[in-house]
Length: 443
Ligand code: 4AD
Image 1 (cartoon, rainbow, N blue to C red):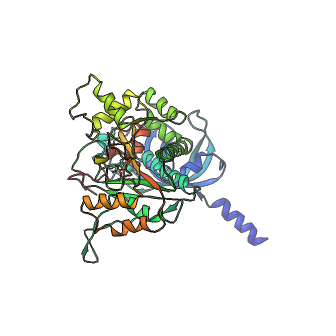
Image 2: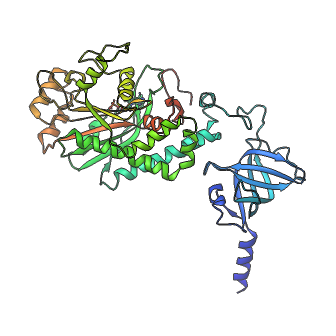
Image 3: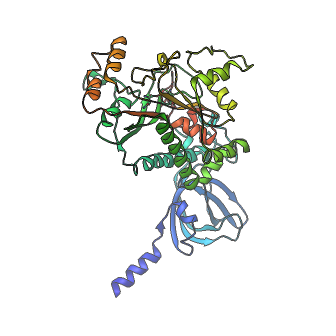
């Protein structure tokens, strides 16, 4: 009994460490708690000192009330603090609970003159991008990181129940065990190997492209979600997975981090927001490449790049097509055979020769997904590889068609482009923690 009594006493005296998200869910009102975080605002008043503290667990900050006698010289915007006190119901309508502080320790000081972010000032994404090592201290970027984390979980959840197996793709370095190695540009060929033994497989990881581009939608290192589906002969199957993946991930975000998403949606037009809502309900548009070319050619707009049949669609074309089709996601199917890599399935159509390939174009971004049915006919694949001078290197790939081959297809979705589309973020560098692009690998 004595032991129990002292245990109870200990529990009552020792504050429980909570995240701020847990604290403001106000289930713990009346208890002693301890929180750790970073000061977002300081307001000294006559009798009390008011602080707002955020710890990244949610967008919300916890209001802390302390005696104004407290020496608050070091309690500046951005400083790291540890606070113990009692969680009480707040008399203000602005928040339901607040922390009546017994003790505040400044764990890390922050000189407000040198700190690049200023209290009460709204810093644009372009400004905070200059500080890749500090920008997670801002509300905007901390929201983005929570959104990325939830979207990652949603993507894994989407594929898992479907029984898709995950392929951990390899990432090379310039020299690995003293031999030259390569950075992966796609996990597709490895997925195709796995698709020979599973109904569906996916991978989600860093992908590298030596893109010499400073555009708002290109990075040299980005994250790609790739899926490969076995026993399918139709592009419709692939389009369905792309559409479902988009919807289930977005639904999860709207459900799990509505405040973070709303912070981004505050900066886009109400029409953009409504459009994201509509994407959750209305089927995406589908046109063929040939129809797309006809639309471009019958437009009065002057494009910088050619729009003849056989030319690749450029960003300007993709954006025009999305706008033309109601500013709504749009699948473009059946591209010219000559434009697609050796693995794309030949539609064997005449007189226009096309491949069973599909891209998903979305508002604000252009191409978000690219995929195709794979050529599963051994003779056609052999000829194509020989024409490309790849037959020796790809003997193993022909083996996949030789031994128990099945019709299959897959696609890749650019994760950052997905985030740009859903959040309405103009520049891809603002949706990835450490953007690497041509001539910039800062961190
Ligand atoms: O169209 P891509 O190049 O397709 C492939 O790599 C296929 N092997 C995928 C597959 O079928 N398994 O790339 C797929 C997507 C693009 O639609 C785009 O969203 C994104 O990856 N992407 C980039 N994102 C950011 N920066 C870049 N440089 C990108 N290049 C492609």
